Length: 498
Image (cartoon, rainbow, N blue to C red; front, side):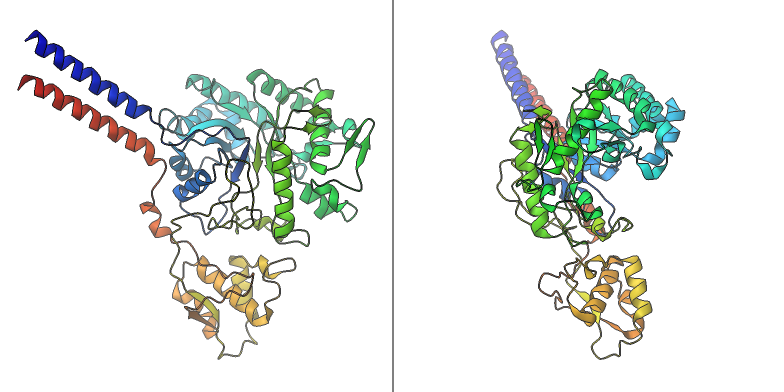
């Protein structure tokens, strides 16, 4: 009997260890790359969150920055291995700043419920997004630090403060220079609050997060040297004493370093929250320029050369803006606002790019749940002279920015423009037949009307998103493996007594 019991014990321990080993097998490798992406969702053609997560994993992207705490995105990120930055929107700052209870509720709803074994690997919370932007005229300024304080206390209560850091993504207009990077200073109205913010970040080990856009410098100034916006060297370098700057990114970065030094935090780590180049919507926004800038940036950052003021010390993290196009963004800054994506709205790579993460080319999204392959075009048998009001409706609701100067569909002719506008609206309305009527001026076709580089889109089928596999299912599979393991152990024990 003793021998039998001993044998049963050995089998029990062996089964238990096997079960533990099964649980220890990760669902996805943890990435340690410095290059991440911003995942924006201002789109009427949103791919299912699990498809987006799989797109990032397929391209070995290890870091992702959200602009809010989108629940579908966080569920899909569970078990994915991606390091995540979630965001508190500017509009929420006032309520959280005024109420510790509101901060507790936000952390419980958007952080605590998603972290843990098999959960989302949330590393940062962005408290606001460019809350010090000049155009906001101080609207959010007074709420930032109180909101950070309350969220930090909520993280302490939830035993998460050791793992999750708070940051505040700042626009580069928070600092300025009369001429050269070494003269960089923060705006006078921000010196006090930025000094307090820097002290907070330094004490918690978090980086100063800044958004840098050489494209906007080029777009906004006809005097800006075009080659200075890129990374291939410039015939118009900026000479700053012993330091010479051959690209705008380094110059902007070191202007921030100088500004931080002047308030006593010159060694504070810096991360780039947003940086990128749009592919259309302006003369300088095109596929060639976007590829040159983005590839140059990645190669520059991953070379670990650093900048003249921080040699050998590149930014902690660099988040490309953006992963996907967002066709519902405001065009007030320019039509290019809807075309920052490295991928199109449906996860198709726009240009070749080596992210430096192990794959020399980008991989496209898989299992995208498209609507049926049909389009709405101008009816060739109808007089289109009275189409103006219909075009206005279509392009007010849907995206027609590719038709304008600097767009990929700018040269498809008048009838092509009408068809493109009709189809954009038709896909926005999920191919509702009535949305292609336009008083008889539109018609549905099953022949792709795309012309050259001008792509007539097919929308995303929202009704199929619930059936898409999620990498977050990894954690649920683990739970299932636990159940299976204990069932096996139970049967082994039962066998001992039979």
